[in-house]
Length: 465
Ligand SMILES: [Mg+2]
Image 1 (tube, rainbow, N blue to C red):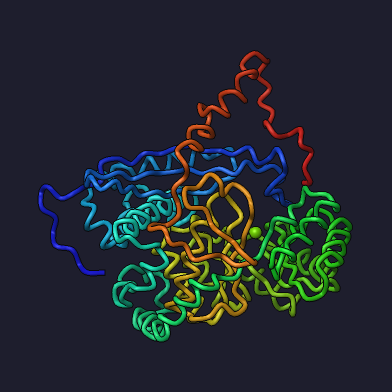
Image 2: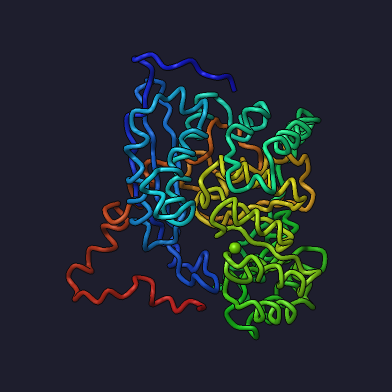
């Protein structure tokens, strides 16, 4: 991407940073239920950047949450507004890295992290919205914008602070220059065949055996070669469910298992070993995402079952340590957990340096839409391979997006629409905005007549805990 001349006084600027608290009532069907999160209402703290360019382009971004607290996440994005308003749009889009560094380094907000938690996720939402805007203005899907960008410029977008001991700027540049070799051929292959996916949809913990069997068989019929089961609440249940799943899909389909941080380290080792006869491909989030050395111990103890984590890893620094400690076999980036595209570039580069495959987390609203772009960039212009790499796929809530993912024969189709695929349909926002969208207004109305009990809305589900 070419450098941009300094903006004239009339150059377009960011004129609005609008935020929305959007919640979908997924807990009604136990979609998304797991051992730690039995009743999620998949939600988005959603942000729209508007400009006075008059070209109709907006930048959309969001943070994924699972219900209560989405208002806190929205407030965190609101806290960044003054840093973004008035910025020249041309400069912002030519160099999102400067905004990324400015937001991460804010001298007062930084105290709330640094580079972790609600504030950092808010930065991710805003930074991703800038990338959405940049890709729309460039008339390219984000994966293509990244894949065609000059390696020098990509390196300029990465913050090497705190990771230079594991990955220097020159090493990153070398990886990207090498990664460009054969990019044109891989772009053609990607457009024709897409990128491999696996599906989590059969394996939510709240689903019964019949539904698990039916959905697992359907996944194989749909062309998936890997499914995932939620585990970790009850060992007897897990043994029964993985037996049911293995019987449904046969021996050649990979079954990943996901404990969503449920266990202590020793418990993780014992539980994974107990399930090992059913040949689980990886154990995901066996314990706290902060426990680097715990993951290393688990990995050594449960091999050949692989250890995967990342959806709750705060930032590039923790990923660096997981890689340095030999703690993971599979690195699971999340497009909306860390500080946006810039930090995910750093993490993809770290994974490439250490030779660890990246299999993104995408169980959430809109996460499939976002993260496909990062994996496709990685394939075309960084690692050059999809071997042992799959993007998670869950088959709900895509209808709320203007350019939803297309998964065919178990593979993500390369997006063609310009942008980051982040934009939600206006009618979905109007319906599911909390608490005043049409769905929630109707849902919450009767409660104003009742005594205030403050019981969680979803408690009646009796979900697996
Ligand atoms: Mg997971």
